[in-house]
Image (cartoon, rainbow, N blue to C red; front, side, top):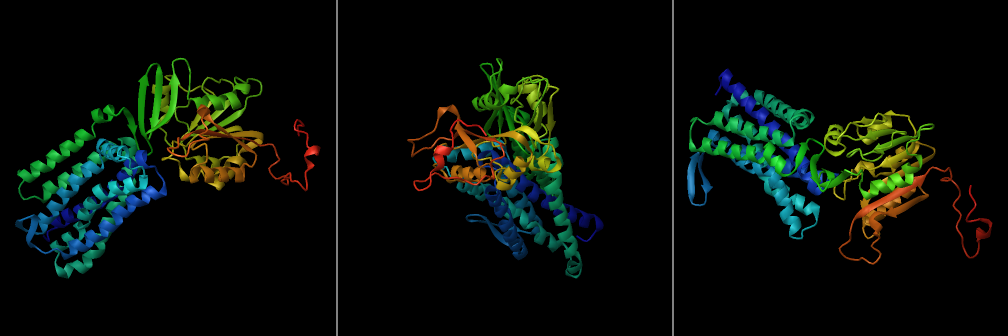
Length: 483
């Protein structure tokens, strides 16, 4: 295969293989987020399930020799390089249809969580091991197998080009699939494109255009298309499935619910009721200044959700920050069922990016980007982030944050998060919503919304006074004295 046409076809195969591997890796990470979260721990499992099998695939592909090979127990057949490529691509396709289809992924995690296996890292490792390792291993053999089509004299010169085009395909898979496809056509359709690419490669590599193998290939792809069709998404109440969120919308009994990555994000009713923690924040921080006309306040909400926080207040100025730009249209169409108010501005940016590029200070900052225990953005719970938030508070400004944690501090996360918050906001109060504190619970802990409230009163740097038996100036401190 030394003709110009054949060489172009080989490099196209190499580019597309690189694209599918990287695109599938990112799709697997994105599809697992609603079930295991988006932390570096869960992402590292998927990355490991790609890199190591890829290395083993390179090694196995380089050792392959045409001849009699066992394809099933007791069944051998002669397999040449072309046949090996086709078998690998077909095997990868079969696995990826299950790995990259939301309904199968949802069923997989539901089975293990329902069976009592609650450790998300173990379940994520099982998902990666069962559905990601094998197709990547098979696809990883593509480069060394294609090298067999070049003469030994040209191989040394062509190796650099092979690696270049493979990396180019990986680059396209890492950028085009996320920045363009997932945001434009959705995660499910991006997965379908991967299936079709593999189907086209199998068809082009096959000497026969019509065979049982080709028929099987496109039957599998048709099944993948059905599993990722608009109707399949509708069955799960999914109205948006982009690179950031799987967005579901539910409506019943006059209530409209927005669900982001399997977490109840926002609720709005025909009577204007909202989630209890939203109503609590409004009651504490916003109701006293509701519809303030003469001296409107500046309010920053990090984590827009359905834009329900502050909705109805026509006096104060609201800035909403969220990385997912689709949330505004979704909220206006499904949750609020009307456009945002004129005093509400949406900034589709990462939270830390927004804070880094603005010097504006706020009377009230609400942190509500924490969508349950599994999808807490790690970079939004660090001391540095809280310090950045504090630097954007006006004198006498207020900070309120919502977290889903154990109110009785029976988890390391609840304790460490509390330590982190208090290291920046030392005089902060903590309130459990739903009147649940779990004081007597030692087993089966329940996560609830916990609100931290801080007032920037200028006393953070005061020398800490502690009352003791030997030195007790409490009589000098009037409990009712205001300073």
